[in-house]
Length: 194
Image (cartoon, rainbow, N blue to C red; front, side):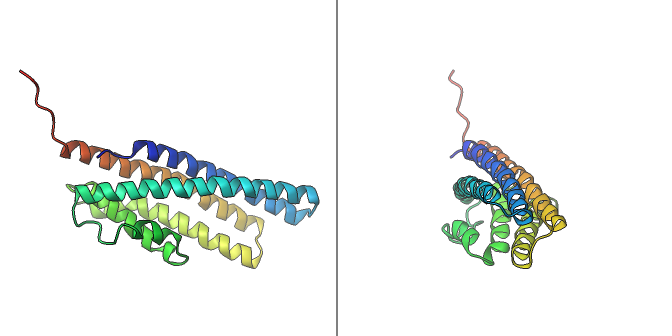
């Protein structure tokens, strides 16, 4: 088994692209709200279509990467992944449940990917800050859609979105690097021929 570096890179790029596309989509929506014209509606429609496609790619790549990391974690620390394998994907897709369960799954994979370390609190900071930014963005975005968004709310929402994307890139990098090191250490080294 190898660490999923290629999946990690594609996932990181797609997440960054989705975050940027979301900012442009949100700005187009706000511009349409301020000056409702057919041109602004067309611009919003185009940006929304781009965002949906890029976000779909980001979600699929992330979930494939995460599933692979979860399988690797089970090899590195048998019994560490307590939930069934399908739960690693389904938990991200169920509304409300996806606000807290996946965080625990990510922490579980991270811990299993570095079985020799015991610094639980320090190792959880990156995941917790990423999760707070992502959950904050999600909650504020939903609230602003139902309550009518203002510019300050839009700025906060999109700042959290960009922060969550950057932090997700770091989380993916950290877990993949931990797995790469652990899998390299666990694999038998070839004996030199004499």
